[in-house]
Length: 361
Image (spheres, rainbow, N blue to C red):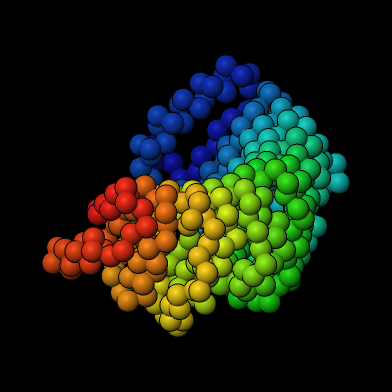
């Protein structure tokens, strides 16, 4: 319990012995009392014992990348692989992961530009991919994700990542999440996703047209983007969640509503680190009413409503024209006095739907 150097495991350990070792470590490692652990080595050669799930979190201090053993890339039984932090992906030429369905890469390092795609191209039944790029990393400036079998993709690009371009070709995708805070100019090519059901887009980059055009078939869309969404049609969209900074920028809400002729549910919210009223345009009531307001919109929810003039005008506009609206839920953190004034103001506003329930939380 006081030793600064620990080593466990043996190459010839049987599977029952591996399970005993795991129980022993889970029970005793929290009781270790040495003020400093100089080294910790764990021989887990369970790759030869039909390993199905492997998760490695490596956080050395000082930071020093760890290269994974080459036999990891030829583990035929591996179904789930999760790698986190100071791990260097140096994918060998011989790669075969025929059973891998879930791959999560959180801020790992890549030896070359083509490292990730080399790995992905040998995961023939991969369904779920999560990639969080590492801040200030300069090894991967061209990101390519081409996986025909992929059904779920999450891609996070930090604001100070020097990315030149990313290419995504995933024709079987059903869920797509893109968080792109990259300050550098970069090109994004996203091929069509005909089976996409749900998409989450949070991007500070105005040039994401290939992305937006690729998700027009979704049924649920969450979007925070300043990209001007002209000439787009979301015929299948039923549930739209949009953030205030997007709603109040150049009257984006009207453009979105006009593009969603079958929209049934509209949620307006605010991200914790976003300022909805900074450098926003004034609200200009449009001359024509979006089709969904007249035919399909049934539910409206507004989170963190403050009653500011712009917000009040938008809320009044929706209530005035949504003929089939059933519920309008207002969620506010304002004081009781201010909230009471909001309730009175909205309760007296004109409503196209006589059966609409106005609720405050």
